[in-house]
Image (cartoon, rainbow, N blue to C red; front, side, top):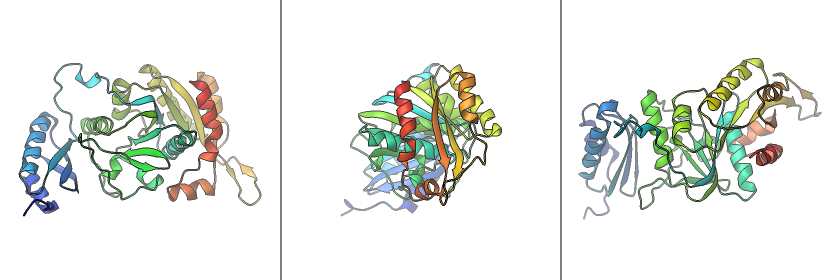
Length: 327
């Protein structure tokens, strides 16, 4: 009589709380499948994962337990952390910025959507672990992914592309207070445990800066190249240069630089105002000898449509054209 019994979240939390040193970050229950994001001391990650799976399987109604440990497991060999991850995609492109607030996630989403409009099969991976915004800007906030028979997460669909984000598994207002190894582990599992299938292009929206996720990605994922996003002013370009140099040091090709919020266009009269300056990214691209992919203006339509979870890919046609000609 318990065959269709749905396990209660309180039961799951109680069972997991009995495991010493484990913190419960998030729990998702779907048709008897329990997916838990846990964190603990990296030296106990493997042991804690086994204990958590067993504890969940002992709960009536749990048909499958899937654990994501946001801690770095002890590597079986010295080269474990640099072993390449296989992705079913013809090309993998990272979208990065040296600093936050330059509109990188919006650019990444619109590049992915614009490529999908050309007929490509496209995936968008939100790797900004600390500030995942892709669920909101794709109109997928509040939705939860399912699992396939192999236990992999099935990406959600929006605007003719596959979409995955850590934001689908945690509350929008829940902060993630994770250290470097936990972030690296979560990112790796977002790539490995997701059913990316037959993609032409996978776009990866990176967190700002030059930290753990960028290093892990460059070491373990066969990147086609990276796109750098900046605004025109000097303070943003200084950090963009750091991102460019980081990718060069790890031998990742730079596909080009995009100047976002390049100018403000008045919706009433069409007058253009360079409120952040103009042309700085293009000049920087020429200076470091990388392609300049194009400009995206600052205007109310882009802001409104982004808040509604809708792409504005018409503004990215020249960028896609330049990108296609560059690799």
